[in-house]
Length: 109
Length: 142
Image 1 (tube, each protein chain N blue to C red):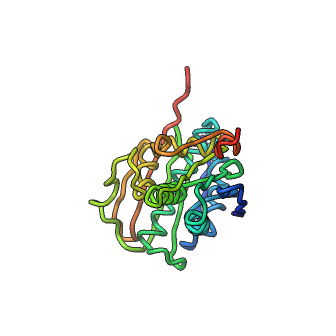
Image 2 (tube, one colour; image 1 turned 135 degrees about the vertical axis):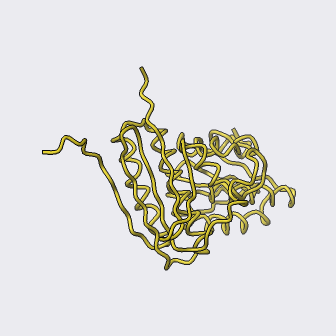
Image 3 (tube, one colour; image 1 turned 120 degrees about the vertical axis):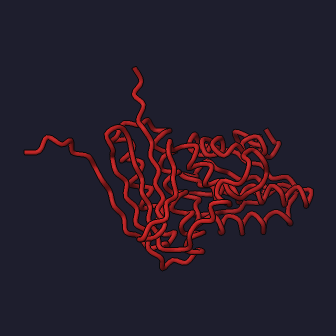
């Protein structure tokens, strides 16, 4: 799994490529928790994620809860059909703000 | 020659190391496809097997990478049967599947996925260790 972070205005766009599973989700968790305090919004691009398991979903839930505690925004965009299927299987799709594109996620569309 | 139908069986003897999870995932999807499931079902079955392995690594072996997991994926007469055997800590049955879905709590999602995807799931103590068995039937559309 590869992770990059780009700052766009007062937001951080986190790009992830590869598989998010029990072995790799701690690295994603660390990056998201490090990004959250220093920006107003974190937007996670899920487009290049080939696979995500429940540990990845649990990581996203933890980050969402921390964003609410810090009064920050945590949004997702670029869900592939495979990733969306896992969100639906775990019934968490409604608790996240999910957008199609980066521009929509950042509110610049 | 025997007239017993020939069916595929894949067996992994793997360390309880997360590095090997992608290797198993890479085999399960094509196996499910060969049996006859469509792409989204293949993804779901792969996820369920991966979650079962992750549960063993996390809970039976407490994230230690030096445990042994025996995984057998067997094509059955009408679907797929998965058997996992480990020699780690026995599962606490009262804690399995103890959360509600749809809430914002991060724990316990894996077991719910397994139960939702597979038709039958059982945890059986055995002299060899903890045995997890799950099966799914292929439903042919008329």
